[in-house]
Amino acid sequence: MSIKINQAEFVISNTDVRLCPQPNMPEYAFIGRSNVGKSSLINMLTNNKKLAKISSKPGKTRLINHFLIDKSWYLVDLPGYGYAKVNHNARDQFQKFISRYMTTRENLTNVFVLVDSRHEPQGIDLDFMVWLGEHGIPFSIVFTKLDKLRKTQSERFITNYKREMLKMWEEMPPYFITSSVDGTGKEEIIQYIREINDTVDYSDY
Ligand code: GDP
Image (tube, rainbow, N blue to C red; front, side, top):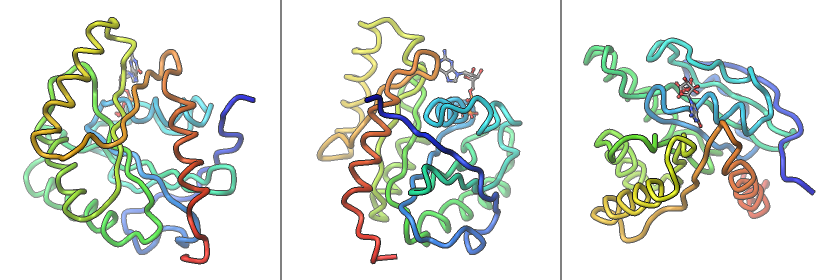
């Protein structure tokens, strides 16, 4: 049997964590730099070509977008960070908004940090993961656009990224190699979420 998402429904978009849906199901947030391939990944995971709007103007959508998946968990599409054209003030606001969501959302189960495999490790991603670690927020890395690399290049990329991570971390967090073009990594991510969901005690909510 193939591992897939059967139903994905848009629920609500918010700028305020207090207005998010009742935290009564496990929640998985997806975040990364603008253009990392987040919308494409969400659409791939949910088998829906239009669920997350691809290439909405970078830095413009400052919304927490909730999708209900198979009536059993929330997928949250967060705005892309690190868009060069936003000014410092906008960036501070953005950081506050994200940190408020991350630190107060009680059903937040895991954050998927998306990393573009075409670039060297970026400070903004590494810093963000350190911040998550400092706040005790579980996360995993999703490497995107692996179809753009040949096998040897992708192996080199992962080795290099691990080396960079191990400068700050005792071990590499869980990670996924993905391509929204050919579907690589899709089943692994869905399976990973299901396994975590199986361990979640719903009476906690
Ligand atoms: P977002 O800004 O993070 O939501 O990124 P998008 O999903 O809009 O993707 C940004 C650009 O990267 C678009 O031109 C996509 O077609 C392209 N892209 C996204 N994912 C992949 C992928 O897995 N492989 C390739 N080759 N291109 C991708």
